[in-house]
View (spheres, rainbow, N blue to C red):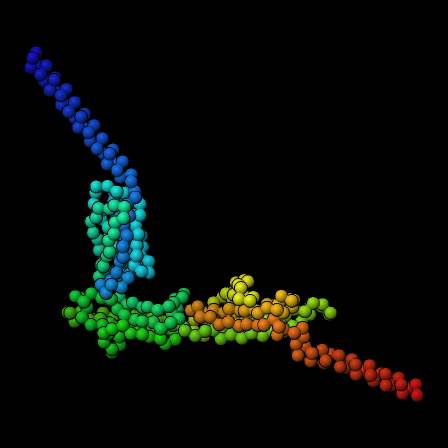
Length: 326
């Protein structure tokens, strides 16, 4: 009987011990979870290539607890990842972009953690610097290459060995072909396109005053002609009065017409028409309201052509009538 009681007491003791361990574990997990609910952790820094040039569009991702937070670098290579739990675990932080080898680091994240990445290119990547809009460069373009010197031995553009960045400024579309050689002597051929337009559109302005009804109010019809043979014309025209933007008009080039009433506000103002090509080069046509007269010389000629025959016939009839009266 004593042996049976001892066994029962031993079983009860083991059950109590298991319950105690479960309780302690649950309490610790709850406390850790409570800690993890503090999502004030951040990670920021810069992503550069091996030449310390900023890499735009690199993805920085912080992994934790089966999920992640991320951010993309801006034009300066800067990133800022937020909403990261502050806890006692190490987090896998990666930086990646197509054409580069992914870099990662294990970090404990706090409220203002910082880390800079340097990404090595996988092969050879051309880098173009300048001013551009809509896929067109509107300035000279500086061309350089980033590459892994442990893999790439030489880079050739045509029959010219690349040694340093160079500037290209020819207007038009050009297909640059290049190849690189590794230390085993293998050659890899690549190419890239450059679209350059540094020339403003060719524009012209004309106007004509007219009346819609005889003796009615005067109007002016303004005609703008614009074309660009390199990048083409942007379909938008900005209309200004005294350097203040009035409207942005969607137009169909090469010709656009608009009508305005010839009022005092027009007569005492400067009208501006801003025409852009697809590379964002700007041509401005202006018209001073004081130059708009109520009737153009062509209209005087047209009126003269209409009235002169009438006056001539009246004069002939008047002379004939006088002759009969004599």
